[in-house]
Length: 360
Image (cartoon, rainbow, N blue to C red):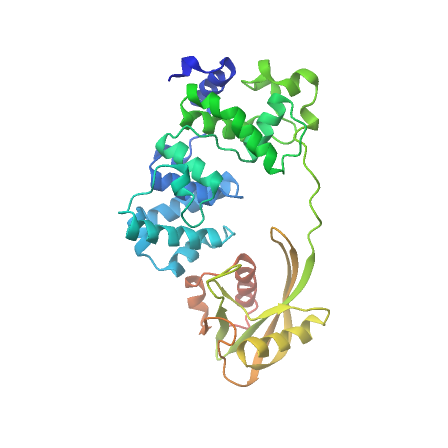
């Protein structure tokens, strides 16, 4: 079918996209591999942040086989700062599975893609639609906002029912449009025009058919139920320095921040951070340490909780460092710190350590 068989509003939206979309690197090369990498990076991450990471990642791993052959540590090092590190681990794991079991080519259907690590129903639909032209709706936050306004839907967009209802409404529309352009058009409209606050309604290609605009409901939609307040945990970590090297431990591959290197430490559980950090170092590495001074304090928010992180410079008194909890421990010289994959907060503490001149 062609764009001529689509509803007038859908054809107008696609026409707007073709003349007004942003020039993004994965759109210049909409190969299945490039689309896959970009969609994984774009999960819960802003486009302007992803652009630089995508370019560096594709420069180092230009093909699926190059990614499959790489060490996961190198993948995570390139992912550093992008957050949600399970995405990088799963991308690498899926590449190895595709290379070993699927002849090196990504499957073309959303259902088959969703069987791979890190690809759920939304990402599978996005890849299948954008890379292979499958006529399937892609329902993300932008799509939810655009179409709850367009159709005047006052149900909570956090519910699965609303997502299912919108997918059902959009499916027949996709029979008459290019699914690649339509799905990208909706996401682009949500990003550039139909924004959460102060949307540019007068420049919107859907204005003539938008129920929220006609009824004055734009500011009231979409409806979002309240999130539970995120708890805040006090965390203490130690920069244990010995002979010009700092101790790092590698987190187990499974779980949060799996495979990354970190400074030993953990939650304070009501104890003074300077007391808790000594206990945590002994529990995790077997080392008895003395706190020399507080290096810095940071705040960081994760999806479901926040942390107040206290970092201390410590010196070992007795014992040899062992991997009592993690997979591995290592003593790193300043020149080696740039080669290890760490989370953003760990990198900030290490930068503060180097800047302190205690660590040379």
